[in-house]
Image (cartoon, rainbow, N blue to C red):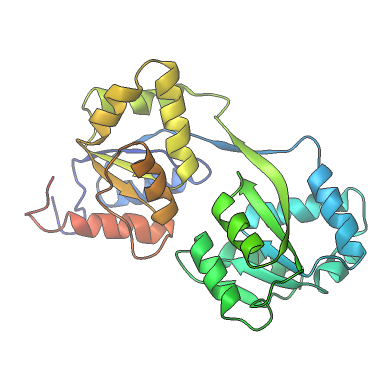
Amino acid sequence: MTSDKPLSGLNAVCFESRLSESAANLLEKYGANVISAPSMQEVPLEKHDEVFGFGKKLFNGEIDILICTTGVGTQMLINALETRYELEKILDALRSVTIVVRGPKPIRVLKKYKVSFEVTVPAPNTWKEILESMDNDEQTSSLTEKTVAVQEYGESNDDLLRELKQRGAVVLPVRVYRWELPDDTKPLMKGIQAVLDGNVAMALFTSKTQIDHVMQVASEKGMESPLKEAMNNLFVASIGPVCTGGLHSYGIKVDFEPTRSKLGVFVREISHEFEDPSSQL
């Protein structure tokens, strides 16, 4: 290993999908040999019943707070509403509610449309930080009988919805897309097989759904138990607490979490783990 390429000669499998090329480029920058194994895709819902139900309440002034959880989801929410309503009507209505943003990606979408937001959730942007941020802001600290719409990303966050209800809110989940396996699962299967064959030293996960899909495919092939065992012999890197929780739920240890749940920080800080010659690998 060299100081500028601390991952030199290390084989890594990365299950990132939407930013798979960026993740591979970052890892290769530090010298790693990368197997990209995309494990998911975002699929818009065929029917937008929840979105249009939200829209009706929004235009009737029945939404008090909107929690925007992802940039992709916020954009899809606006796009879906735009199939039925004028864009300016949508934006004017959004400007009339208190908006909570989970991290920088929904912020970028809202700024593009000149829609303001009142509460910003800090890293690592889990449901716990959402609640803490809301509890600490006078505009969102009292939720009794307030209608809180939650733009969901792929799957419901039961913990967040439960805690909002316990605070007295009327909770309105709004799903705009779901997560599915990629249309082509051959690269994913190649990554899984590389782990089983002992051909990689590191596995990187950037979302809980990735591990769910990896284990789903392994289970369908009768490989779930051997894969868990093999994973526990690798250096497993998780981008944040939610992802870590998903790995732990399958009995897979996590060796590393970054200080911030950002892809560039994630890979850079992994490389720092291997700058020390005494690193475990």
